[in-house]
Length: 342
Image (tube, rainbow, N blue to C red):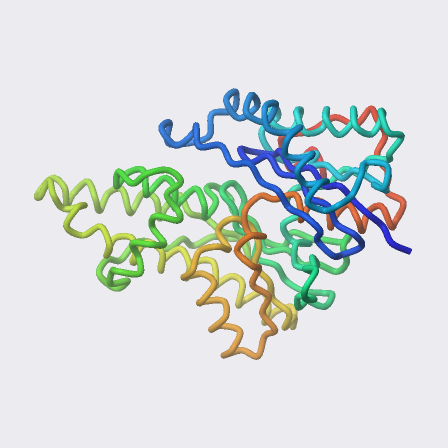
């Protein structure tokens, strides 16, 4: 039986809608918000207003591109959280209104689980490789860094997590110190290709949790390096920008991979995936692929269009939940923090 799901994603600053038939993606429309660039970060109130402006045309375009009318939708999947509460309210409220008006069931989705399950989306012209259960997923985004043991679409155990900053925050905060534009991660990735990753050494954390992460010490080490160097040479950052980016990126990747490798050894799991916005980083993608070749992993690296926030991942999560009868009540409310969903 064919199941058609409309997915709606509005957790941060991208408004997205997608249509999936079973696991095949029919459309995936994203409206980004450039307004935040001049502020060096996402402004929640501006994000909410932009979602209000974008959500109707985005959903309408997604349905038209998929060639699907609302009456052919079996369920509406929406991001309940975590994320910016105002942004989530826009997506949740729209999903409720559309569901009530057309008598369509709703399915709530955990945004982070959506990133992980994006590995099960297929394209109209080809079936993409999918990991087998159980697999390990390194989830790296702007606000979260986790190692997740995935035993099924509904059984996910966080075995490691950051105790302070996430990897994406480390990229963005260090980029801001160097005067690079927001978002800093992609800029650092681009400049790192031109630099020497051994030029500078930054501190790596010693965390008690076996698979837990910490990036606050790295950020402090980076800041002190720049402060001391700039005191001697005001043009230091400009002269060494590429080397700083390359060294910083390599340090973050080393931190991420060390714990991931340990987890695969301890658990004996050979299917390894990455997901989240930072999984677009070319250095991380290459490092994970190389680690997989050396250790006999089956590695799953998402297509770039599935790394950032998108509704395709919400729709595929909704597909599995709808299949399992996990229908949400209309009284459901969005939540900002991960702890409120788990």
